[in-house]
Image (cartoon, rainbow, N blue to C red; front, top):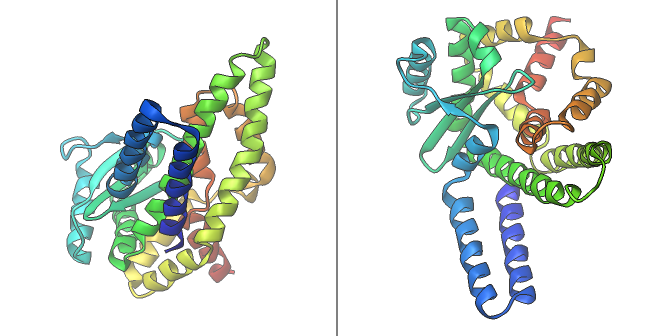
Length: 273
């Protein structure tokens, strides 16, 4: 509910801003643009997120193991058959997006290339379980809002910094923007979802011991030293991103947001101790 409210308030404020600042033909064009944003925000949140991640669709003949795993788990959980995508990122992440009855599973390419069949089954189950619980649309709305805002801010900021005379100054300005934006995105994410989202998911997973055990094996393989996700490591990635495209920086912003694997695999470690 809070994710939908933030999205609604943002659209209303933007509409009021256009109404106050524009007039005549410009107001008409602004109203059409605002209506387009409303249509996208209501019915095409997943498509925009796929665009922001630079995701590419996976056909059944390309990754048969993943396709069969997703189909099997969707049938088991009685949820719509998901469309499958992969993307190139810096961290090992997977996402599930849902807009109405449209469900999309997005898998990081590095994970897809190294995962075994049982691992893909466990991951697909964990993602589609969020659809079964009815919590995936809320997360999709929030990711849409944060990802779109990040992309727009980077776009306008990039146009402004292109006026600066020195390349080093432009790069430093982009790094400073990331330094402020990434923590802000994480704060808003935790404010809306918090750990409650991941606790509910973990509690639901405990009802399926076999799938939970398979997912724990994924965690044992993927778990990195704590320094990998430490603040200095993240700042180094931010610094590296400053010299790359706004598209790459947008992907990194979405990957830096709290993820269920961070919570679930940390909990596995705590239980093992």
